[in-house]
Length: 219
Image (cartoon, rainbow, N blue to C red):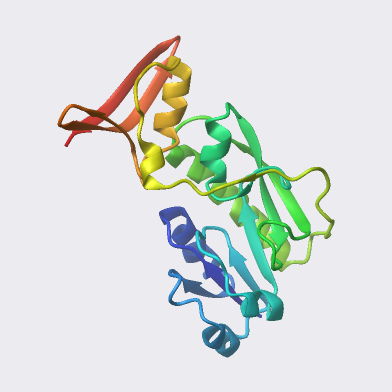
């Protein structure tokens, strides 16, 4: 059985590196690589999308089994930037949801879910996502899942843009600022504020007992 994994961030590449030790996996790392001709040539049993930011060609979705991993309790928080859109709204827990892709965005049948904490840094969250995705992919390969339709009222949020990372001022609670900065740690467009001719880039944030500390750069 052949499989494809579409991923480009560090935790997605790590997923591929470990899965290929056990199964016949091909890695696709960019939008340009993901073509119907290539997928047809590989002819995979399943295409996994644990770490993907682009629309998948409809012809691929219609002709191959595509499994996407979305960090939200679908149908809530459909759309782009699910981590950021939940963190900034004060969510501390969510789900890694594996679903069968269809022509609609994040609307396919759910096959598996796993709890995911949104506490800590982006890299800590990525580490948990890696563990969840790896566990779910193994179960899916072995057929240990059941399809079910999404239930409940959907909510949809747009993908964040780099300009959305700007803080217009600091007149927010320390907890809000902490969440805003940490959700935009590398590899995302970092939070920043413009003061006169200077631009302060916020790289990391630490919050403990109502004390907020940050690491930043002046550009």
